[in-house]
Figure 1 (cartoon, rainbow, N blue to C red):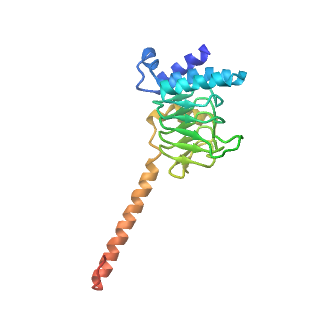
Figure 2: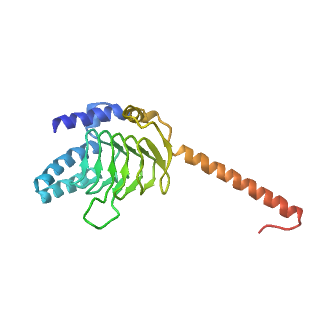
Figure 3: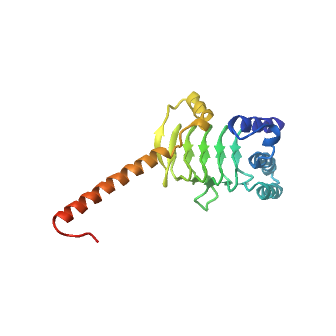
Amino acid sequence: MFQFFREDIQTIISKDPAARGFLDVMTYPGLWAMVWHRVAHAFWKLGARLFARMIASASRTATGIEIHPAATIGRRCFIDHGMGVVIGETAIIGDDCVLYHNVTLGGTSLEKTKRHPTLGNHVLVGMGAKILGAVVIGDGARIGANAVVTKDIPACATAVGIPARVVRIGAATQQTQVDVMDARTNAVDPNDETIMELKAEIAELKLLVKHMHHDHHRTGMSIK
């Protein structure tokens, strides 16, 4: 447990440029949400589920982050800011993942089966993103801010939009996955391509309207 705690602190310091050192990191709610989740998860596996639920509830009250005690979370997971994050019962998160605030790993079924997402290693989930159902997010994938994901996303892909669609796929190698995640603080916003596409569509619509006005003016008709 102490080793995991030390890894979490080192991860935050290395990945968050706002972190000023050990004492600063100790105030991060995402750090304490992970600490208490590991305790709650241990009790859940031991069968003390009511006690695990109580720990999870206290953690949610203190941090604003709701993690079901049955959820499986790997090492060095960083929940940045964290307010509003919800992680469901059957969710599985790999190692070295990053989740921003208001992220939801939710279910879409009432059946007592695997109904929450599975995130591979080195996955980045942008603020406000919703990943719903028993979908699989491949290693090194990036989910853009406010995206809604309801289908599997391949490894090293960038997915944006509602519903989410893949706009970029990198080389599917472990080294590339690590490099992508280590460089994320300097990376281009994954929504940029979508914005450029929308601008192009708007320009085409403006040109079409201009031609329509020109044609109607030439024929003596008006557009209302």
